[in-house]
Length: 213
Ligand code: ATP
Image (tube, rainbow, N blue to C red):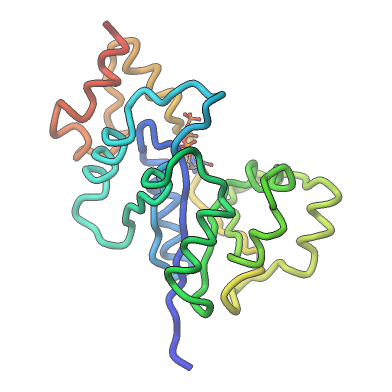
C-alpha cells in the first residue's frame, strides 16, 4: 500500500499570526511528515470580535507563510456561515481527502485537557488523530472521563486514518497574540515575534497599529 502523507490542521483566531503558531505548525509538519493547514476561525457571537477582520487575518497569514510550501491556509471555516464546530471542520476535511489518509487535529496540551467539553468530542476520534503539542515539563492532568477514553489510543507513531493520540514535542516559545496586540496598543513594534514578511506591507498591520490611536 502506498504511503499516504498525513494532513494536519492547526486552528486558531490568528489575530495576528505569530512565530509561536508557525513554529508549532512547522515542528508538527516535520514530526509527522505532514502537510499542515492553518485554519483561521470565525469567533462565536459571545466572544469579543478579533481586531482584524477575516480578510485581514488571512492576508497576514499569507504574508507570514511566504517562501515555504509546507504550511498552507485553509479558509473553510470562514467560507461557512457562522462559527464552526471542530467536528464539522474535520468531517468536511475527511470528505475532501477520503477515508484512508491520516488526518490529525493539532491542539495545545492545555486545550487537549479540556477536550471533553467540546461539541461531540468523541466523534473527533472517528474522524482524526489528535496531535498534542507538548512543551517540556508542561504536563496537564486529564479529567478522568477523557483519561479513560484516550487510554489505549496513545501512540508514538500514527497508524491508520484516525483514532489515536500522539504527543508532539515542540520548542516552547512564550508568544501570544494577546501580548502582540498589547505591544501595538502601546505604540511598540513586536518585531521578531512575527515573521518579517508581516511587516512588509503597512496595510497588513494597520488594524493593530490603530489600537494605539
Ligand atoms: P490569544 O492570545 O489571542 O488568545 P493565541 O496566541 O493563543 O491568541 P490562537 O489563535 O488562539 O493564538 O491560537 C491558535 C492555536 O495555536 C492554539 O491551538 C494555541 O494553543 C496555539 N498556540 C498559540 N500560541 C502558541 C505558542 N506560543 N506556542 C505553541 N502553540 C501556540
